[in-house]
Length: 309
Ligand SMILES: Cc1ncc(COP(=O)(O)O)c(C=O)c1O
Image (tube, rainbow, N blue to C red):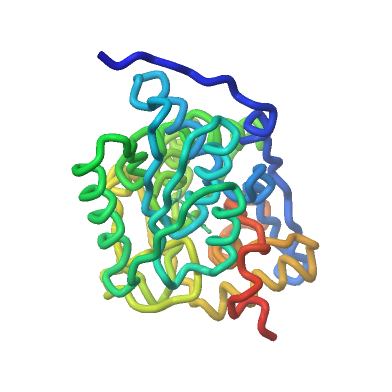
């Protein structure tokens, strides 16, 4: 019989989710974009929320034993977050990561004491997900968070991220924009925002080079963490009004703009989200409120094109 053992939450984990919503004034465009600063989570990304809620849910359901190993396939940020939660709560963590993910992600996971195994990126996330399932079938010490299909991922964004946005920005919201990796952020936030504001429009940002929701084939792009050549099961529950295509070049240009004009040291998917939000806002009344997410910090992109001028 499984026994619930909720390990204590060390102080660092109480910092998760205390992220501000910042208004960014784009004077030239005469628009303000409201950004949820998820890069301020303790390990530096929106994924800290998912890591904590899935691990604590597993503890409550008695799925984690003293010898358990948390095993996940990820583009990197979930791995960093799980490695941090594992370090703080005393669990081993093993991460399956595509060989195209930036090397900084691997270093950060290893610095938290996690183990990294790389797989060839050629067939997208599907390869790593299948590997994780095969490994778990052979060894019952492995616990799989299954971030791409675990409903807790979206539920946590519905109950926390979106409710924080609603409290931080009282009054109408015209549009919410987010890229998708697992789809947890957009699926959960869209549900709660729509319940509060039935007229809000939900936009799924995706790379022009891999615009699968727009019916195109996945291809190489440089917006790490999103659109991994796979439409995740969680995304099927999302109510999306329109996809918005942003190219890798547009994403990088906006990411640099966020750093150089606003002092926000964030990664490429944050720039992509803001570029999409600004494009949408330009077609709306200047007073319409558009919200998006700053997903992660720039420290995990030093070796990528983002830092090569
Ligand atoms: C950098 C980055 N941006 C955005 C996302 C998208 O978040 P979600 O998985 O909730 O769709 C991810 C997810 O992996 C990410 O790593």
